[in-house]
Length: 130
Image (tube, one colour):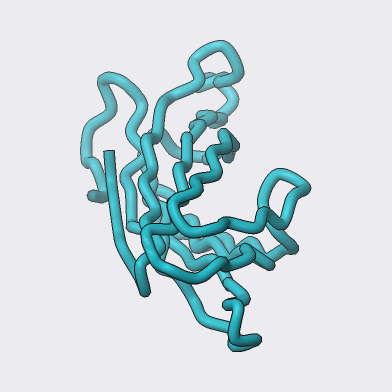
């Protein structure tokens, strides 16, 4: 489990390999990740958008930007948490992901919450990038 806290917003990520969707013979490895976002602060926040940096084992960068996560822009009251699962394909058996969530605070100000860098490693892969 990988975790990071920014301005009382905790983000934890648990990556996993999705063997049934992967086709190594076709250079396709699929990884999933479970994310828990928790508001440990005293003010509500809303997750408005996301930005991901995905780097495969050859150093190729893929960037993803979009509104919310899994079709939602969750509002997190103090003490609340939001959990979701998503995934990404890679052209190599290893990679690394990191990014930010753009949050809107109760004060009307935007701020970024760091998503911790986490390693994507297929079982038996060599040369982990993290």
